[in-house]
Length: 469
Ligand SMILES: [Fe+2]
Ligand SMILES: [Fe+2]
Image (cartoon, rainbow, N blue to C red; front, side, top):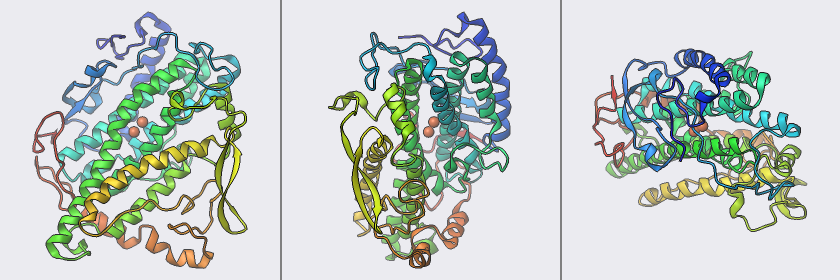
């Protein structure tokens, strides 16, 4: 296992000290990163001790490192999963050949683009979430938010390392631009639409980490298959951090659901809003919104770029190696959803051009698992949450702008517009949720709209002082 050099200015397991030029370049990017963090990271608590986990090695034990850290002093570093001996490219036209340690010239601009688009989402989510610390429902939750934030910032480091190490001058320029674009900026926004929307409240944050970070998981998982080994190994390690972000979302919504069910029982009503809870129909509308905008992140159902990336061995499918096919997709077909004569149907298209559909399909089944878990809690109250139809409220692909209902029927535009308030968060929903966002900063205390977690962090009790405010 590659040891992590923690004494360096930039902790790393890539032997940075032996490449002076690269080291100097990254060390000159580091203060600009810190400036960005202080300016656009969490708006408060930068000087407070936060009980954070810091990766100290890429192995299993490397995660057991929890301590109080002031966020600007977090040890952001460069960690690649260990190289796999004799790894070969597992898909596309170069299948079976040894993986690339350097960027193949003909794929240089495609690879750079993939890394830049991935890299851009990482600081974007930190920017989107920067105000949430002012209204954290508990110190436990505030700590989790900060953990997610510092790790997203580390993911930026992961991509910036690749740009600096393998793409020369233009890579360094791209790394600078990753700090220059800002979420929601009118002049210089982040690349993907969903990353320019603010995350205004904690309910949105939990749904964002559940649905949008999960898109991240699937993008990273397909890049973790890449024939460009440094990218694959970067993403393999990022996925370990990402798993925690999805836990925060899944458990967060689970706790909101639990609290709602408890209040329903206690007051014998489905309308728990007057009692400081969040009604199931409000939860469903938030779910509909976050799920539909996250589906858009997969791009159009068919894509020449995706086909080219696959054929070139740059970006595979989710769990590519475990798939039982030729990994070339020359002749296989997949059913791609579409609208024909105002009917929702599917048509068989070459699997190679429909890779976005395949990835999205895998994402949807992953999303369903958490919903099933929430529904086990809701069963007691005779309620359930559902994922809306794939075509509902879409802005990208075959369903873009189509008036599809959450249960998958095409209706008239007027009807859709009229009923939209029953499907998407209303002003009243947002106002109510906003009214609940009162910071709770006494250890162990929870806001009234969410249940306590079943356990604390790293064997600490729930009432541990996770952020020394
Ligand atoms: Fe990330
Ligand atoms: Fe994440």
